[in-house]
Length: 242
Image 1 (tube, rainbow, N blue to C red):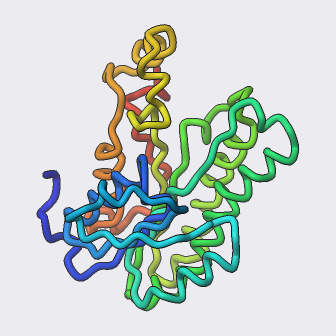
Image 2 (cartoon, rainbow, N blue to C red; image 1 turned 90 degrees about the horizontal axis):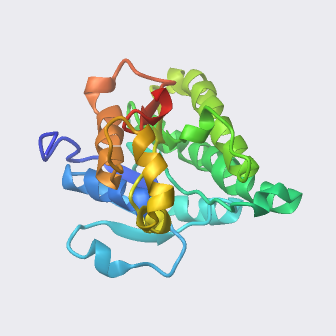
């Protein structure tokens, strides 16, 4: 445990995309540190994975204004918002329609949740937003132009909202995950021809875990990071510098 187990006691956190993968790991990490966590996503939910965690699961489609508004209407307090909802459509993103779908979830969805949560965070007296950028916020991907553009946009959105929300006492930062071991990357992990080059370029020579991301998200939401806003923090085992 990297933090005292009650560091977020009395705090309420919303994690979009928090019902699986990296978002699920972040949700569990915040709950383990004492936060009341609301994990938002699209059903069906793997409820067994959250048994005994105290995490509440709610439906939210970040690409829908009505869905976000309806979900937020049931939340009376917010101290932390983590935007982790996202999609990727390799290859298909070269088609304009699919490109727009990816932007709608990854970028516009992030903005939609930030805007909807702003007043509640302001009322908390100093809330924290952590967005999910990517390695592809820094370089391009030929098969994922929509994902790359959206994550580049998330980085710039994070910086812009850090300025816009500072007067409300809200800090806005982002994490940029590297190669993380989740069900979505399982096929890559299982294929030596694809996993080999990834690990060779990663100085720490391993796949990251959702908990690795959760630890940095937690730090960004603690008083230890009280003078940090607008930062994009790579959590990639050194992949970007190799």
